Image 1 (cartoon, rainbow, N blue to C red):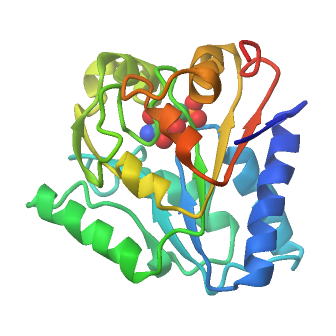
Image 2: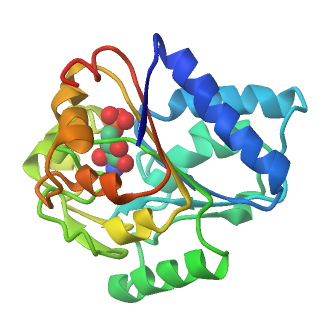
Length: 242
Ligand code: GLP
């Protein structure tokens, strides 16, 4: 695990975009794993600039999202597919049809999870996965206690995560969905390169556990210690307990 302490979100954005640009220079049809949350936004912004400047192209790319809320209506602004459309797809030249997410509106959610795992495998697996981290150490929506061997499945959100995410739902925790579909920890670990971003003191304990704590399902991100190629981009606040 390579931990890089950055001075600003813009610097993290540049380093993340460098890794993605190098990947697409080498492999134009590469598969990108994309994450919601505020942490990867600087990467998407920088990537968007580089696409507009003609420095990199995602025309042939495929992208897979980490997770999705269950039951948010198709046009809900906080549905992760819509969030990703705004923060990522609209900024770059990827074909929107090549951007995939678990279907949180499927009638058969278990089947939707299996289909999603198959789609990732059929695409050849994820080359580079962007990740954020929850204050409780979750990655995607793999909450504490999640099996480190898990694949895409339905999960119940913890009270902590629903509170953390209430800011996107008019600060009303009751409006935050209770369930989600999420790639499992083993799904995430199958990606060839993981790039995790975190900023601010509220993430310091989670970052400390991830990098230095014992591997445990109670801090799901600790699984990353077993991955051969992880880049962690943290600011001084998030690195303050390392
Ligand atoms: C949500 C997402 C995670 C994300 C986390 C942290 O729970 N499902 O994928 O990592 O939020 O978000 P932020 O980057 O905004 O702190």
